Length: 487
Image 1: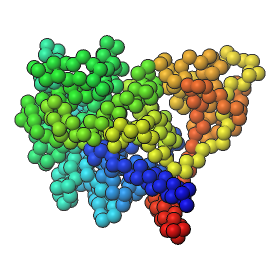
Image 2: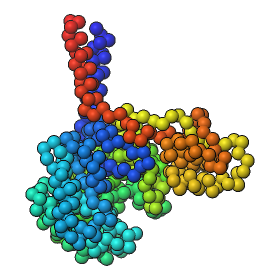
Image 3: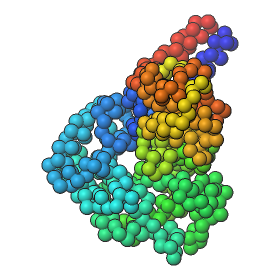
Image 4: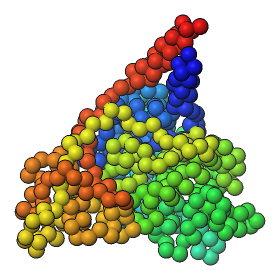
C-alpha cells in the first residue's frame, strides 16, 4: 500500500514538473540548418513538453507548419532575405505569399500565426547595403497584404534587426544617447513610423556573447545578469549588464524618432556552447539562469521597468550546417544538442531550480560505429588534405581554439574529422576510407571533453505526440484506481 502510494505520488509529481509554468514572455527560435534535423513533429513535441508557447521560424517550411497546426503554439513565420526584392517590387507577389503561407494555415485548429518576419537582420553592415532599398517596401507590401486578407488586425509584419542598427556616440557612450545608425537613420525612422501605424512591434536581436567575442577587453561579468560587473552610470541610472544597456539604447533611439513607447520584441538572444573560448556550457547556463529569472519576474530594464518583454531564445537545437562566417560558434547555439538532448540545467520558469529540459522522445541513432585513423596507415603525407576534405562537408568546429575538442594530437584530430564526415554520410562504407587512412571501429574514440558523435537516423525520431501525455495520465489514473481498490 505504501509503495503504491509512493509510486502514485512520484507519477503525479512528474506530471506537475513537466507542466511547470514557463515565463509567458518566452519563445524559441527553431532553426533547421542541420545535416540530420529532428523531424518537425518531434520538435513540436519538445516545445509542448517544455511548456514553450511561442516559436520563431526562419521560413514557412510546410512540414514544420503542418506539425504546428493545432498545437496552440504562437508562431512567427519568416520571409528570407533573398525574397525581399521580389516582394518589394510587386504587391501582387506579396498578396500571393500571404495567401500561400499565412491564409493557408489560418483556420480553427490550424497554425496560430502572430507575426511575419520580413527578412532577417537585412541591414547588417556585412551585407554592404544589399537589402537597404528593398526591406521597407517589402514590409509595406506584406503588411498591406495581411490587411487586405482580413488578418492584419491580429497578424503583424515586423523586421528582425541586428542591434547594430543603433548606437550611442563614442563621445557619450551611454544608453540614453542611443540613436539609429547614421547611414540608415531616415530609413529606420520610416520603418518605425510604419510599424507604429499598424500597431506592430519593433524586433531586435541582442547577443551579449558577441560583445565578448568581438572585444577582448570587454568585462566578462557585464555579459551576465548576476551583478558582478562594475555598473555603467548613465546620468544616475546604473547599468549592470550589457543586455539592459543595449535594449535601452534602442528605447532611446525609438524615443528620438517619436516612438518611445513602441513594443519591442527580442527576436534572438542566447549563448553558444562550443566554437570559441567563451562559448561553453557553464557560461550558457549562467546566462540563461539570469535571463529567465528576469523574464519570469517581468523585471524589465531601467528605461522600461517592471515590464513584460517578449523574448525568443536562440536557439532550440544545434545546427551543424550553419555558415561559420561569423565564427565557429554559429553551429552551437542550441539549448539542446543535435539529437534533442539537453546540454545543461535550465529552468524555463525562471525560479532558479536545478531543472533539466524534457528531451526529444524516441530518437533513434545510427549503429554505434565510428570512423577513426587507421593505426596501420603508412602514407600520412595525405593526411592534411583528407582532413580538410572531411571538414569541408562536416562540422569540425569543436577542433578549433578554445573549443571542446581542441588540444588533441594529430591522430585525434584526424579521427574526429573522419568520424564527423562518416556520420554526415550515414555511415556509408565508402565514407570511412580516406585513401586508406581510416577504418570503422566499434570502440568509442571520445575523450572526457570531446564527444565523437553518433548521428541520429534521418527522420527516425519516434513521434509520440499527444499520446505520450495521454499515456502518462492514464498510468496515473490506473494507479489511483488501484490505490482506491486496496482501501
